[in-house]
View 1 (cartoon, rainbow, N blue to C red):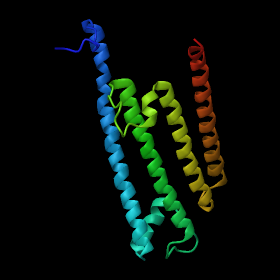
View 2: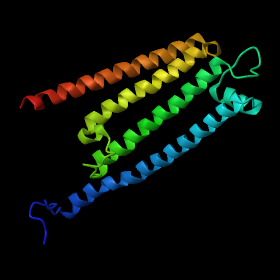
View 3: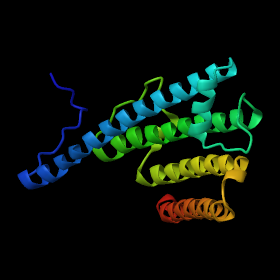
View 4: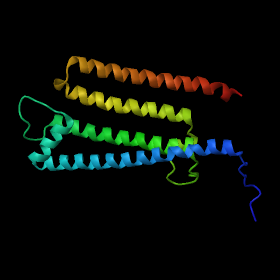
Length: 199
């Protein structure tokens, strides 16, 4: 016997049903982002392994690290120093933040644009997912991008000797542009949602 409280989905005409079903075309995109997430995990583990090996005196791992972070100096790097460690750690944090961004896009995007996940009551349901919509997702993605841009800018400033003034100014201007864009998105979202809250 069916539950009378259960809402039945209305039958759609063939064309609206086809258009509505087209949302599932996004599924391969989200699955592709999961693959990209796995690549980031492998990259993180490789960089972490190189850092540990370099800490124990491996010159091969040290050179791999120096090459990956783009660190250059007049004297050859023969051992880990504070600058190299800081740049590597920032690179690892960068990977984590991009990975968090991917999770927000995968989970939030799927929930918003494809299909409900029915995670209500699940102990591991993300707090932000309970009130996610397209506007909230845009604001969260914008703030995540600002965080990633901040890490990149900090890495550039620490390694400033290897960049021209033009690059430093350009990266700073780009970061400010991201910041202003995020503020504009948040303000627009607030203005659009204010009338609905008053009624």
